Image (cartoon, rainbow, N blue to C red):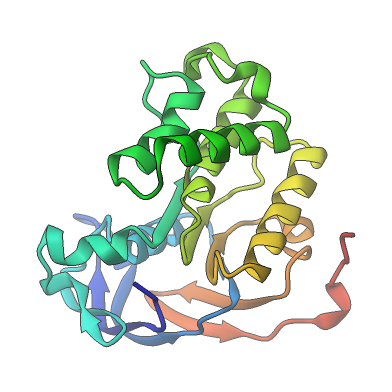
Length: 236
């Protein structure tokens, strides 16, 4: 399944008793880009990413992927798209009674995306690349916060999806881990993975490692925001 387009048509979503996150939004998301999702604190950046991941269901409107409204799909119909959408939200997503290695293996094995041997090779390679292989057999509660955060980020990376949704990915990471993460993303984009990336972040220095467009969420609407090319940094 190749994802070519993502679009909101009249999408509205609100949490009970709160201001709308998005309100009657029509928006054609750029594809094959790194999109920096910006908003004021509490405006709903995380909720927007969760809608894009299919984890939150809008109260009205259509969320179109490849011209199909996924909100009308059954679990089975949506699954081919779901397998091409990876996401990481802060420190969530890890199973506490499984090792870090198991946590990374599980999605590959559960969805039978690759053979067990290939899954193990892929997971071992990621743990080594990010320098946390010595924690592979530890459980999430028994490792430093930095390692737990890294493992949360590696969960979607190990799937090599087309769409990658990241909520504050640089928070809690050291500079070396950030450099490794940026290098990994850029390398695999050249190989056809992570085609469409959405990042919610307040970390401008981190974001300037990418060529990005800015989407601003404000008062329930989405807008494009101009990018200042002079603020770019180059990481080699």
